Image (cartoon, rainbow, N blue to C red; front, side):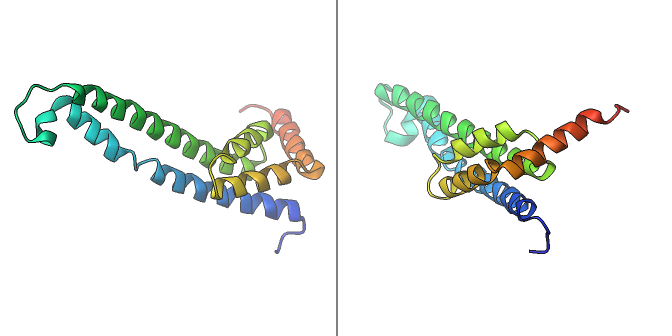
Length: 147
C-alpha cells in the first residue's frame, strides 16, 4: 500500500471490486436469455417444439410465463450491474455515500461474492473517517463556482 491513508486504499480497492462484480453480474444476467428465446418460441411457433401440427394449447401460456420471468431477471440483473458500476465510480469520486450504502446492502442478497463485497463496503463506509472524506468532497463540490 503506497497510500498514506488506509481508507483511501480501501475505497480504491472497493471501487475496483464493484466494477468487477458489476461485470460479472451483467454477464450472469444474460443467462435467462435462453429462457426468453424458448418462451418466445412457445408463444409464436409452438409447433417447432412439439413437432406436430396440433392446435396450440397451454404452450402459449407457459411460454408467456417464461418470457415474463426471464425478462424480469434480465432487467433486474442488468440494473444491479449498472448500480454496481456506478457505485464504483461514486467511491472513486467520494460522492453519494447513502446510495453506495444502499447498493452495498442490496449486494448482500447476491451470494457469495455480492455478500462479501456488500459487507466490506458497509464496514468501510460506516467509518467516521470515510464519512468525513465524503462530506469534505461534498462541501468542496458545492463551493466550486459553476462554469
